[in-house]
Image (cartoon, rainbow, N blue to C red; front, top):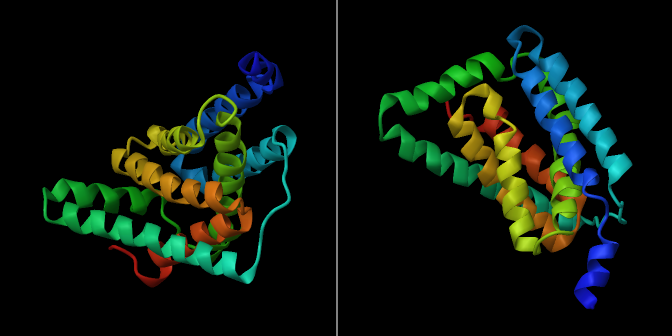
Length: 209
């Protein structure tokens, strides 16, 4: 009886499916044209943010100095994990690290406005969509731990149109780290700061290449 009641309380499945279709369609469009990548990337993230505000059941965000510091710490942890993986790949075949260099040469930020968009629009937008909307919607159909794993996998797969499989794995790893933080503390502020911290370390402070 309880199970039947919980099924009736579930939100319509389209609130999960439609945002995912939107995300993957926008990803395909974004990565299909290198010349306008940054314009379409930003445009796509605005759409994903709109989906979050339309479909999600918004909760009061937990934020404090402690949670902000925790977010920064998780960003450092995510960077450390990625850097460790890079060092391992650097000891392997050259094509592994060469593929990273090639990807960054095409899609990496190069202008000041790229960095501004990345830090203040793209990072927050991705977090509210993938953690604030998709991860929470998945919890209506599975246990939280599986929702974290599946939402992270979907986040990684959103980079599939780049043909850059290391990026897919990286997205999955980062999604797990940030998903755990969000499930633990329910703080959009914390995961956004974690994402921004990762990007600052990755592109400005301690880049791999």
